Length: 414
Image 1 (cartoon, helix red, strand yellow):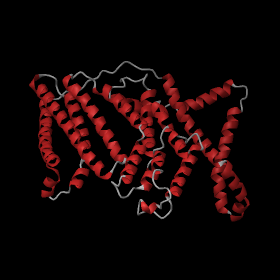
Image 2: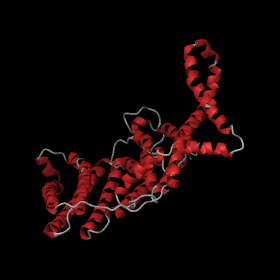
Image 3: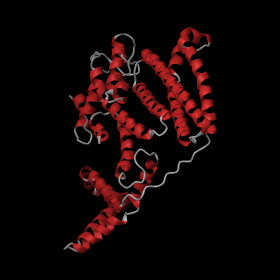
């Protein structure tokens, strides 16, 4: 519910895109919570509920037609259903044949030009919505019917296969040794400074801006390996103890990798400023650190349910970043750097159009009468004020309808 409300807060297209995908994923998880075998903290529930969702869309499509038939039998007017079906069929026929007749005869096309323009102006959008609704109604009815008649059955017996702990011990030992060597090389670059890197023909700025995305990806792999070892290893004997020790070492190394990535990202931001992707990278590293904390708890207490903790953390973290004015902070950082002469250019187009309306209040701190090419040589000679006014027009257009209204666009339009 809170995730749905975020659409009224910001106007960042990135957040809206991923929020929509998250809602598409979370809706089946919620709809089938009462008719599923697996609880929400069991990862197997995701596949089960998605299967139930798609089955529900298609397996009871007949239910809508049966309901119409029942209505026809019980209602006082036996021709109601026939009138509705005939009207829909007539509209579909006209919509299919009319364009063909227009292309077949130029005189007919000229005679119906005004009618077509009037219909396109007043009815085209509504007819499209009507046909879309009629097409989707049987599937939506099928889903609702499935939710109404399905009940949860007896819980399935879960059998988790257990493997010999030696298998995961060897994998974890290899990973631990590899990361130990990697961190030793990393520490030489971190503490050696530009002079040490210059000896190896590496520029300090190039070294600082490379690798943090890869290191964040590596920590995701590490987390997967740790959880697989803890879940699927046979919990007896010395091998199990060794697995837990090696998993703890890998967790500590992963924390160090995240710290190294954060350090290098900070070096890069101090040199080139903040951007939306760099801000989200910070958020991603914080989330990964929280997940590794949960993994550390599972290493200490093997019966601890990792997903029961990680799923709410992930959703809460995503809701939190949606409520933080990321674009505003990015624009403030970039404008501050320019006004303090830490940067000699500023990407006006990126801040104004690639990000949300939250950036406009910070861009107005610049000299509005100056030409755009004063701030960015790739732009023209128009004034900054006219450029920002165009962006405000977009914000006003978004505020003109409740479907596209957001607090971000409303404040920018003012």
